[in-house]
Image 1 (cartoon, rainbow, N blue to C red):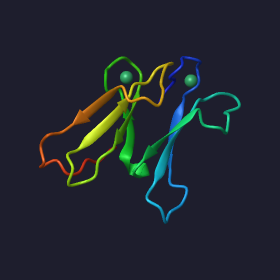
Image 2 (image 1 turned 180 degrees about the horizontal axis):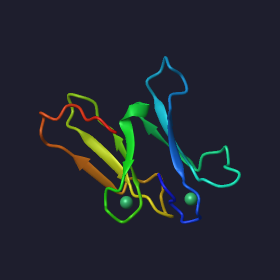
Image 3 (image 1 turned 30 degrees about the vertical axis):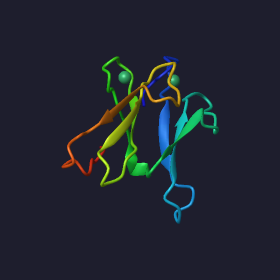
Image 4 (image 1 turned 90 degrees about the vertical axis):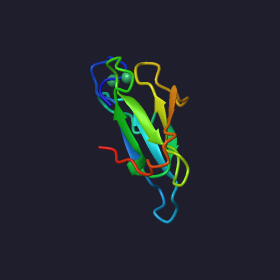
Length: 108
Ligand SMILES: [Ca+2]
Ligand SMILES: [Ca+2]
């Protein structure tokens, strides 16, 4: 995620599925530091660890959390959480593709 709060330490996101038999997964957000706290600052529910990525969506210099929140046959929906010191669990932007031909997106 890069250094979201400008304290000199990179912050990061880990996607986990606590129980492999259940489809529910979580994206856990941690602030970097020395030492790094083992407790996440917050977590977000995700469909799978592959349904979350980060990029600078709004071009403000901070990477943003992007989560795919729909399943086919529903239109593709992405919830975006803007990064920076005020990053939180409230989506700041939602992108919905009205093209039904977009059924799958691959995050890198
Ligand atoms: Ca930081
Ligand atoms: Ca950003």
